[in-house]
Image (cartoon, rainbow, N blue to C red):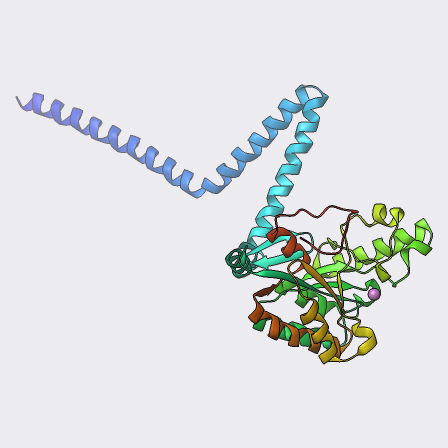
Length: 316
Ligand code: NI
């Protein structure tokens, strides 16, 4: 009996120590794994990449394109994540409506609320930005839920970059009035392209996009101009002659007496009298059922698509 007991004890001892050893090995393994966990992950992903590229190496030239495409996708993925993380909440709330225009959710809600209910009028301002007059106008727009279209001079963009940026970020529309106010029908093809391209570049440098609408100086155009601009050409059907009168009351009276749904009003924000007249007109017209919108907003609200190279004097 004594002997049997001893043998039994021995067996139990062997069994227990075997279990212990096995348990220790397992434990050590799992500790190892948890420590090198990150490394293992990277190795796996790089292996996948390797095996992918090995696969493509083995196959034909078409798969080479796939590899570059894949790389491009990788790169674009990177930029998208960058875009997602770096900018502020703005990216989620702002919406790009046209290449020249950004408005936020509040503006969109406002536009939806007036759709079909208000008469629309587009105030447009050429030759600017002005030194202080443009900012004076921007200061007043929120009082009337108003946004306007600026046809800026390319050669003024760098000097008044902050004004243009402010106008654009508010949701106003930035259009091109070309670089140096030449009559586009009286210059060479090369000059014409320069007038357009230099302005596009200058504007892009400030707001990140090319202008989506153009107003040719003097409202002067021909087929070459229409073909070259690459945007809709926006003229006007209400001319305040503000540059001539330089009188705020006269500017206001002209707008109020000629206002109608779909009108495009021509003014110049380099004159304080024009800005004052525009604000006075908004003060009156808001009680006559008008909403003050950009040219592109007006087109969108009226369900019209503006086409490049086409001339618009109003939007009906
Ligand atoms: Ni002009």
